[in-house]
Length: 481
Image (cartoon, rainbow, N blue to C red; front, side, top):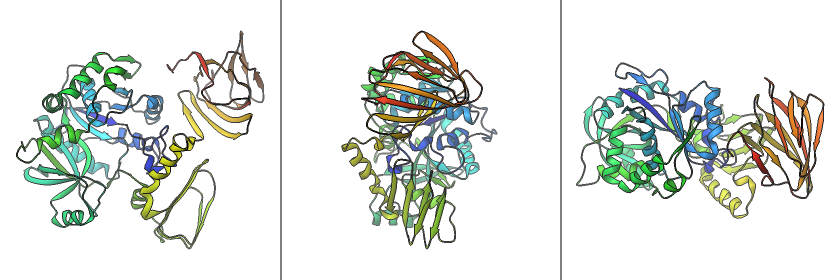
């Protein structure tokens, strides 16, 4: 039996604004450890007990086209080689994502058991999680659709629930039914009964079984995915489904598309199993969740970064770049980033999505992008700007190459702080080293690359009548943008 990890990397995580934004969502952030949530997920099944599993395959990632190089770079940092990166041209929820991933997983004529994990969950007891996957895999190999249920610790109204049915084997039970998010009184009754688990959105399903169930319950989604997969393009590890075919695919979740119809009243087939999971799980759906799982001081506070607190209790403070001092706070969330600061009542933190909504209405960039922007070649940070100038700190990774480009409205000065730059300017090609500079006039074709083995750091000063990122005419680009 082959276990194939499938990592679902969709979602923008805007409830964790201002740290999580559309262009750099929460799964790419280091929120609950030294590695990002995506990296932790990619490493999670390492050392999976192999008593019942023949082989653990390299993970297949399903994510947004926009994050492709960020995902690849994060895997490289933790020495994980992907079994493929499936790039969705648009979001269509988890059922189409899993359907395409199952097709990729069967690409070598194999029919693996898929371990389907969202990239934005925190699991602190990873040994318990691996043990649960090892228990679930034989059930899935035998045809069961296995989901993990999280033992509830509170009457949570923000999660769906799973009602336990008859015991199958070991800790596994048949799913009696799935239940929508309850009100507070109902959630309290569920917790008291001991018969309900939170729906954690983690599944173990054999590839062929999933595709067969999609053919039975959602043939429209299956057909659209088959067309998108047939028209796919591949470069390096990236698999791009046909854009038009996938855009025409209906949107639905794994639960709604298959699992709930299989467990509907009067039609329960017994094919869906649930394993209770005690692994200190959290989906980090809001800042309050990070406070709940964080290591607290004597005042019940969770601090990250440079924080000085006086008479502060039960408060979460995340400081990215500056000293944050608090006085007389209780049950508050403070998140500091270079371009935005959030201060909120911890018990009303769900309203952060209203802040993001207003930023979008006002067309403010803070809704979707950080001041520090990642690119396939490295990153840049806009450290100062005015009506006709902008100053950026730019870091180009070894071997990184910016596109061959031209601007209609701005000129640029480049000053090398450390490393070596190879510069193309019109017909010229030359090196610029530490403490040297060059000038790129408006309208001149140019390119920057790092030929060295160390990062290239430089300061760019832009000047002109318009300094937007859309004033770029690309002639060549290694990264297909």
